[in-house]
Image 1 (cartoon, rainbow, N blue to C red):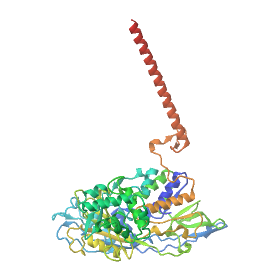
Image 2 (cartoon, helix red, strand yellow; image 1 turned 180 degrees about the vertical axis):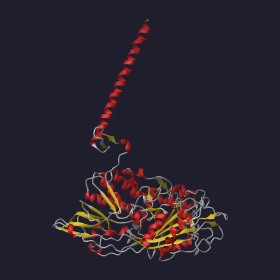
Image 3 (cartoon, rainbow, N blue to C red; image 1 turned 135 degrees about the vertical axis):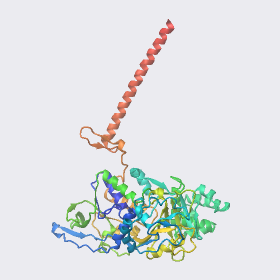
Image 4 (cartoon, one colour; image 1 turned 180 degrees about the horizontal axis):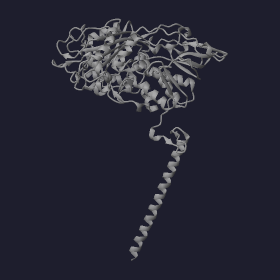
Length: 591
């Protein structure tokens, strides 16, 4: 239940090997906390979270119990994983000429912002095009208004979670292996940036970048290349630093402050206290992914990350899976003798038999946990800006930005800036995602970074920075702390978690694969789906078979044998023709 990434991969894997799958989600959209929204849909989503939802009455389904069965009620807290939503609109209500840099509007609270959305949508001015040239700071250009953002809202695809795909990561390998990659398109992340000394710099990570960099001296370039080459293989010298801080290891390699900053924050993307073995593992993962598809290790799906769970849902449906949105499970029916879930009861009181049940951990009550552990959270911010954080000759830059802690006790922040060619924002704007581990509310954690790097009414001396048009802060539950063994659940009930704090998708793919192997240890995980042109249809019963089936393989053999026979016939005919020509030649000679 729920259609997050892990659940969607599990559903696709089961459906692909012939299992019957019923996939339910109480929400009206796919992908749960991995979802992508248009701007207008996001405003609706915010409004629903701000409204105080009345707890639903727990219905008594004991009348559906049979002898030897027990009911396990699931929690009905849809919004518990999202908290502390705050919205700020810095764009003017209506289109206007550019005047002064700080007259872009006043802060508005989340509730006021969302309430004004329908009114703004109905009273917006007739501006045909105001997006052209927004990235240029010309004094006569028109500022982008909130009304224009709403009008062009369908051009946005705003992710709830911010992640990137390592080119040699487990998700990319799975997409290629299963043929699910044909359902989506991807773009390269074109550059790695870092925030240092009050300005944004480009990080040289590939060989070409290192030698083209003007930030590094010749000596630093040689040291960096020598260090990156030495990181590929694990050595005895590296093992000697196990358990010691990665920063200490970098210092002992005689690397200067420049290189230490790049390696620690932008390549390994770890903290100063991270153990050396973890820092080196992250560095190797970064280096292994370089050069496979572009100059950086990362890919991003066009139309947003919410496309990936939907791609796996599509694969599940193609092979017979059934999907029901706005539909949920109220409770499980447990067989007391075997301690197995034999059926579920949905929100309409229908009893549905099942052999296995996969559910997100948020639906399981605390009484099923062996040990009470506090939920960890991530701090998220979504920004709409008028230009790139580091302007360049190209307006098609997709950037990964690392922001080290700006003060003691502050978390490191990962930032992803998306351009309009990713189909996540309208022309003339950029979509920026910020993520860090929560120390407090998302606004408390991330607003100091936003104020420093973007132009807002609270900013000072930020004339050259991008102007912030609209901003959303919220906290999201961190799914990396899930322990399946920490729950007293029926033998055939399996837990998934929501998005984790990692930049990649390894955690979700690992969860899905572990669940699949527990249930079907002898089956292949997500075998390749056939290409449509490879499917052979039986003319008599109009049924189809795939290259993985024996019928198709036999059919291919028959085709090959037929082709071989035709080739042999042609060769015989050619041989006869050659003989006749020779005979004619002999006759001519005799004459």
